Image (tube, rainbow, N blue to C red; front, side, top):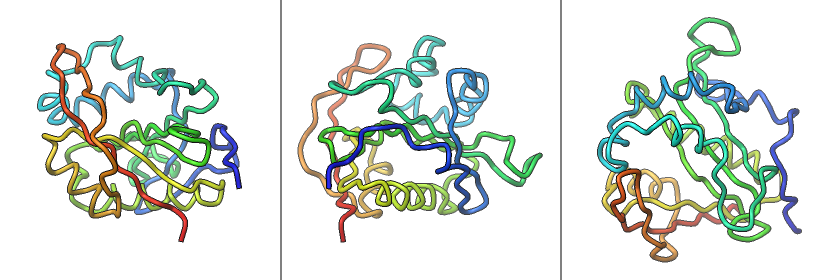
Length: 191
């Protein structure tokens, strides 16, 4: 079955798991995203050369892999339901996923970012599991991502979730111009 390259549908949301609500976010939520990045600064300090510029923060909502269109991009906020309203008001995580990359039956995780104070509680695993279930229902066969070779904890996280290395990916140039080696990982969603 060929995957329809599309945004996740409004009826796919809100998606609730592990005390959080997943729902779409957009460039209009830039302040919330900036606050999250502040609470997840260790990743940016270690791999991106420090806190991202405003332009780089905005690019998170628009950057796409080759051959993809804005309709393929899904920016998903992870909101803590215990803070404020029942739909969640504190952004504790962010996922960037793209339909139809690297092939029409696949989806690509461009970023999964969690605030440092919510890590280590199984939240990342729960978010990915919920997204995988949704993507399988939409016909996805594979899920891909790239991880910096130097990001040992990140690579261990993804491999614990069943992602396996498939090839050394092109180096990524970070915000300060450093070339960082990366590895592409894949997880088959077909049982």
